[in-house]
Image (cartoon, rainbow, N blue to C red; front, side):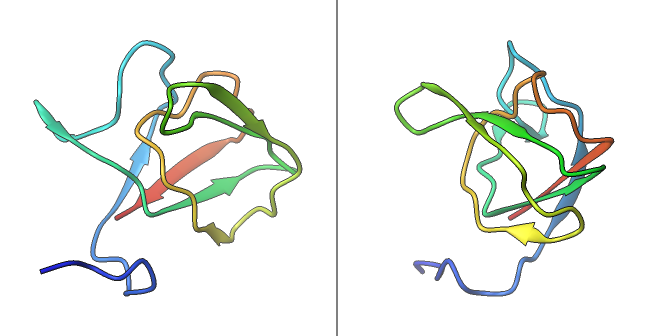
Length: 86
């Protein structure tokens, strides 16, 4: 079954940004986000895009789930908390 990007998120996880490791649901099981929520004062999000390039998205609204797909959230992210949804 192919999931629509617009389906309700089934899972959420508080993560710690990491420059060296992709996100995991559990040990060895990769996590690709379908949404990201940042908590902080106008936080910037730094991620790897699908091609593996570092991208900084500035001035994202806090407390909003942004429809961003990524496998890694980098340490340059300056949010107080980072939640990923999939």
